[in-house]
Amino acid sequence: MAIQINLDVMMAKRKLRLKQLSQQVGITEANLSVLKNGKAKAIRFTTLEKLCEVLECQPGDILLFHPDE
Image (cartoon, rainbow, N blue to C red; front, side):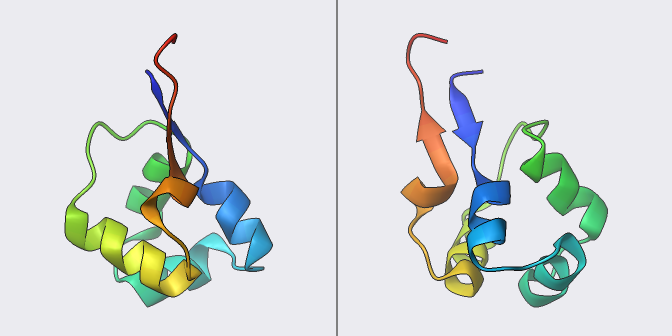
């Protein structure tokens, strides 16, 4: 997939664990894990918005596009 998920990087920068982030964002740890591991096929804008709010970042800090992959 040409889109890389850097959720783990942002979590490490903010010193947040998966459980803490899932509680603050309001999604299950399982769904957050799927996203973090790059296995998700889609993400809702509301979820992305909440992730950015909690992690104090921009969508581009979480999602990267690599056209050659």
